[in-house]
Amino acid sequence: MGKVVCVLYDDPIDGYPTSYARDDLPKIDRYPDGQSLPTPKAIDFTPGHLLGSVSGELGLRKYVESLGHEFVVTSSKDGPDSELEKHLADAEVVISQPFWPAYLTAERIARAPKLKLALTAGIGSDHVDLQAAIDRGITVAEVTYCNSNSVAEHVVMMVLGLVRNYIPSYNWVLKGGWNIADCVARSYDVEGMHVGTVAAGRIGLRVLRLLKPFGMHLHYTDRHRLPAEVEQELDLTWHETPQDMYPHCDVVTLNCPLHPETEHMVNDQTLKLFRRGAYLVNTARGKLCDRDAIARALESGQLAGYAGDVWFPQPAPRDHPWRTMPHHGMTPHISGTSLSAQARYAAGTREILECHFEGRPIRDEYLIVQGGNLAGVGAHSYSKGNATGGSDEAAKFEKVD
Ligand code: NDP
Image (cartoon, rainbow, N blue to C red; front, top):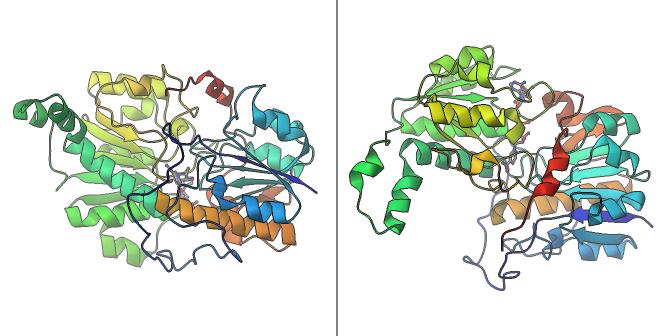
C-alpha cells in the first residue's frame, strides 16, 4: 500500500478552533463559466471548518486510511531535516497548498522514486519543477477554479485599500489619533482610473467584472484574446503585451501563472513603463516581480503602492524587504484559503485522489502535467520548464508565536 504525504500550514497559535465566527457557508452551485464544483463521492469534513492547517488534514485521513494507505500530515517542509524530506523515499502522492508550498524541486523528485501524483490543493503548481515532473512521467493536478473568485475579491480589497490609503488610516485609529490630513494626503477615488490586468483568466476576468461598477476604465493583456462579446460587454481595451498596457494604467493587477515565460516580468526595466504613482497588486505569484525592483520603485515614488499576498520563497524570511518597504499592503498568502475556499479545494483534492486510486481519469480541467507532457489546463496556461529555483531559501524562515 502507498504513502500519501500532505503538507499543510500550522494550526493557529492558540490551537485548532473549537468554534467559528459563522455557522455555515453560502451554497454555490456552479462557477461562473458553468464548470461544476468538485464532485467527490463523499466528504468527511464540515464545510466552514479550518481544513488547510495540520489538524484539519483537508478532511482526508479517514478516506486515505480506509484504502489501507499511510497518511502523513506535516507542516515541516523545508531543509534537509524536514519531515517531507524523510518521507520522499516512499511517497506515492504529495499534496501541498500554494500558501505553504512543498517545493518539489528536481533534486527532491529524484529522491522520490515512487512519486506518481503531485496534487495541489488550490491553484498554481509552480512549486513543482514541472519539467522534472514531465521527464519522470509524474502527474501534476490542481483544483482549478476552487479559489479564483476568493482571490478576485482579495484583489478588489487591495486595490481599494491602496488607492484609498486604508491601512495607514486604520493604524491612526489604533494609535489613538484623529489625523485626517495624514490619512488623506495619499487617498484617492478609484472612479475614473484605468486598471489593467495581466491575464484575463478566471481571476483576471472576475477582477475586471467586479471593478466595472466602480466606474473604472478596464484594460487587459493575455496570450489568448477574450471573446468579442465579453470585450464589448465590459468595454475592455486589449493590449498585445503587458509592456503595451502598463503606460495606460493607474492600477495594474497580475493574474497569470508563474512559469519561465512570466518569471520576473515586472522588473526595473518594465517598471519604467508604468505611470508615475501607479499601484501594483499581485496575488498571483511573488516571483512574477523582481523583489528588490519593487522596493526601489516604492522608495522612488514610481509606484504609489504595492499589495499582494504572494512572496518568494514562502514562508518569506523575516528580513524579506516586502515586509518593511514603504506604502505596501501585504498579507501572508491567504487570499485563496478563506474557509469558503478550503471547503471547495478539500473536496476537489478528495475527488482527484479518488480518481487516482480508482484508476479513473482526472478531469481535464484539473490536469497540469500527465503522461510526460503538459496536459489539460496546464497545456493552455503554463509553459514547460522550472520556476522553483531559489526555493531552498524558505528554510530561513523563523516562526513568530
Ligand atoms: P487561469 O488558468 O484561469 O488564468 C490564467 C491566465 O493567465 C490564462 O488566461 C492564461 O492565458 C494567462 N497567461 C499565462 N501566461 C501568460 C502570459 N505570459 N502573459 C499573459 N497571460 C498569460 O487561472 P486563475 O485565473 O484561476 O489563476 C491565475 C493564477 O493566480 C494561478 O496560476 C496562481 O498562480 C494564482 N493564484 C493565486 C492564489 C492565491 O491564493 N493568491 C489562488 C489561486 C490562484 P491563456 O490561458 O489564454 O494562455
